[in-house]
Length: 383
Image (cartoon, rainbow, N blue to C red):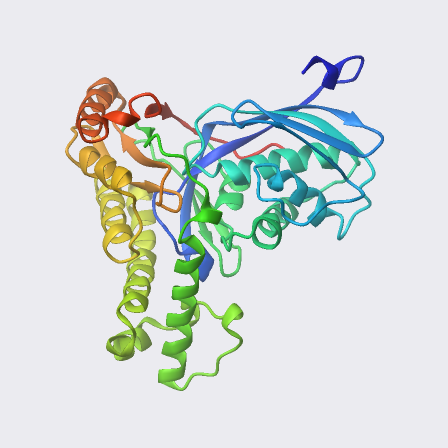
C-alpha cells in the first residue's frame, strides 16, 4: 500500500455500521423504522489522484480494483461495484475529475450491519473531498441509496443510510421513511446499562444474491392487489407501497391474497405497530419491554417475512435462552450475516459462552469464522 500514499497527502474518512432494533424489512414500503449507529465501522485511508484513477484495496476483500472516473463500466459484479457506483451516481449532478487511491478497512466482519452502506458513504466522502463537492445530510442519503438501487441492483430502502447519517450516541433514531421526518429519542436517566451484541454466523452475506429483492416485490404486489380489491386509485407497481394501504383495507381483503403476499403484509403492519410502541417504551426507559418487542420482530421475520438461514435461526434461538439478553433478532436482511442483541453488560461473558456453545454444537464447521463482538451506540458519520 506504500505506493498509494508515497509523497502524497493522506486523508481518512469513517462511517459507522448500524443496527435496526425495530422496523425490520419495512423501510422499502415507506414504513417507520428505528436505528442505532455503532462505535465500529468502515475506515478509508486515501490519497487523491489528479488523473482520475481510482485504485481500491480492502483489508476484508480479495484483490485490488482499478477504474477511471471518466469511464465507469456497467455493474461488474464484484465488491468494488459500490465504489464505481458512487462515482457513476455523483457524475449525474457533479463534475468528477479526480480519483482516489483508497485502502478500505472494516472493524467488524461483513454481514447484517450495513457494511455496504458504510463503504458507500465513506467512499463518497473521499470522492467529494477530492473533487471539492459539498453535500447535505439529505444528499448523502439520497445518493448512497441510489448507488444501491440503480447501480448495485439492491432494492433497499433508506434505513441503512439514514441511520449511519442521523444517529446520535445514546439516542434511538425514529425515522418515518415516507416523508423523511425523524427524531432522536434520548435514553432516559432510568434506562438500564446496555450494549449491542453482534453475533456473526460465520456465513458471508450479499443482498444481491439473496431473496431480498423478491421480498420487496411481494410486498409491492400485496399492496397493489389490496388497492385493487378496495377500488382505490393506484399508480405504477414500482411506485406502490404497503404504507399507502390502510390497515382496515388489509383486514377486509387479506384472505383474498396469495399466502406469501399476506404473510409479507402481516409482517409490515405488525412491525409498524411494534415500532410505534417500542419508541414509547424506549422513551420511558423500559428496556425489558423494548427488548420483548425485538424478540417478537425476530419471530415475525422468520414466520411472516420468511427470512433466516438455518445458522441465523440457531443464533436467534440460542440468544433467546441466555440470561441478560433484553431482545434479539436478525440484523439486516436476515438471509446470512448476523444477529444483534441488546444485552446487559454484566452478562456479556456468560452470553458469549452460552451462545457459542449452543451454536457451534450445531455448526462446528463454522468455528473459525463465527465471531462475537460488543458495541456501544455512536454518532452518525461526520461528513
